[in-house]
Length: 586
Image 1: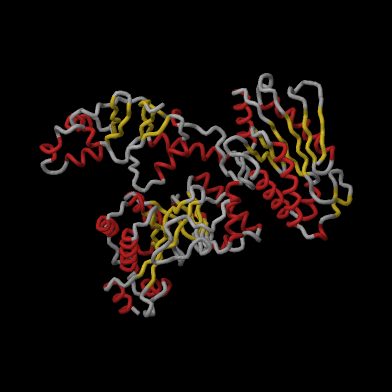
Image 2: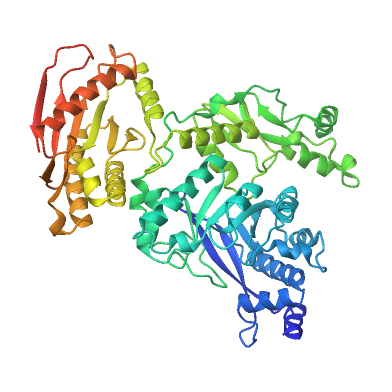
């Protein structure tokens, strides 16, 4: 077996296959995980056989270097987009054949930048040397590579490893993914992992998805990146487009970190000195050399922005032999960075962040130009942009409901105050499940959570993300802010969908059940229904969300008194006005 392994490595007989990792939000392929195979007629055809022999014969580093070279060469030859995920084990660092710098040599040879490579740290045996893990992680991150923690939650990839490494990506092991649509315990574990990752700024990938039901459950839970046989199998020539069979209807119905203010680029824009496109390149070189803090300079022709000149790119050109004689008198317009990005001041920070971080060719050291109506307005610093986006994500995660991942009280109140300040007309609907506590007591918290999740999905399906807002304010209580005109029609549709969801969740024999009411009396209850209390705040007189909350409390109380699926429309527009209301039962 040792001789066979040496033969495979020396004759370059390793065969890489690639499995896509899908980004659901942007409907694109985030990257590909490279998996390795030996020759089909070899006893070392499978990766388990290959790496088992490599460990026993102390050839782990040699095998990993050979796998890395084969994968990078084929990835570039196929011209695949996105990032390349490469598996590696920290144990290879202890191998006597390990040699630093091999990966850089491979990438330089094939023309692949480190920013496009993600190393997945995997371990199939116990590893208590956390210093070694940190060293492996820091070694690659210093060189510009990203780090992923593979098989999170299974084997030895536990919470301590996660906290020690702080990786860029975490991949949830397929144990938690398999059958997650039928297992509420697995859903709780995945929600907890997702919540921790969001707070730590890690990207989550759910791997091992094999059924549509598993995918739909993960979509509803807010998972953004997915991988598995149901999406695409590993192949020597993998798919290069978003899989057509993936149905994202449920994704459109769920908004895990809803942006309640949608901050725009002008929030972080700064004014900096600009240069004319006719300026000699030599002058700009002297400017960069005189100020080490200067990373790039905007080139503006009158009021029209043309692009950025990058310090690194320009000085690299002028470091070449005879560069001064060749380029010093040329206009700086010829040296504008091809990666220059010009965005309008009204563009959302989130969108700009996606443009910058999702383009594998984008130079993160080059800031972007901000324009207003096509005229130069200022510059956006990359570090300010990323910090602002991170702060918004952390804030959204902090104030989101842990079960549904929908915004809680704080963002809801802020959004109401925002609309009142702008004096916009809107409708606020308080949605509450009638007799939810007796149902929860009778059937248990798993069924109760499932009902809440189904209601959240139904409500999300009837809001327009650019106009409306949904908040989960605790338990079975949801608040929807409608600016769309057909709000009542949508509320009535929610009744029908919720009734169907309840019927499919519980068998017919359990439609009626015995339980205790809030006073402790045992009685018979029927199918769950919804009470929706609606108010129309007067934006000229209601000055804060406190006034709206008073209106809502009264509307909810009256809706519940009607019984069954009912909408109560309050005519009260001011918190202290007399109660004039009309009600209708559906």
